[in-house]
Length: 199
Image 1: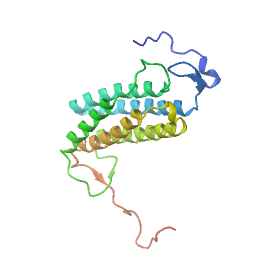
Image 2: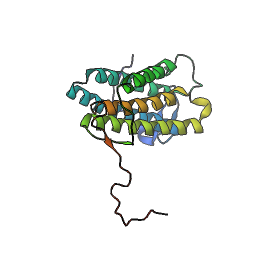
Image 3: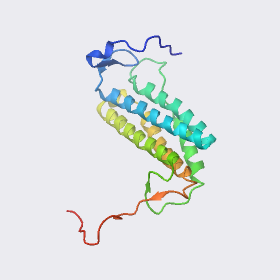
Image 4: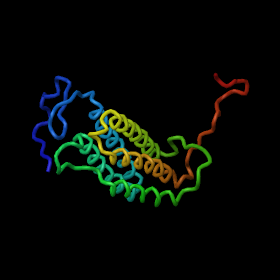
């Protein structure tokens, strides 16, 4: 169990931070960037949880709260290189597969799209789309980490984040009355008739 007695330690004042298995790296290290983005994603999912509670979307609220726990698992996985000793918390394929089942179940309620969806329609949906874009950014940071440190970064955090962004997209549509209130992109909607394509 984690126990936090002090909130500030001053040990990061030199621009470094401790990894989960010990050792210090620069706060700009790609590993720190990766799990930092996951932390931000968790915070934005938290905003969607609050909105789910406000509108009475109990099943989605419960799902999102469980995802917040998973995101802490993702961060814990990323902050400890894979060459660390056994007993480290790692994201499992079962966690990713659970997201796939949720995607399939919720997507069954939706009609196929004829265009891309703009974030909006309802505040709940907009919050879910905001969470989706932050998760996508976290996914890119993890992909960059895997490219820079392939021998010390496992594949499952990336898979989990990829599925999570897909799930948040689907939930964004569900939050818009199962897609009835989706705002669809109209390509070139604001171009004047005399506009010519760019180079």
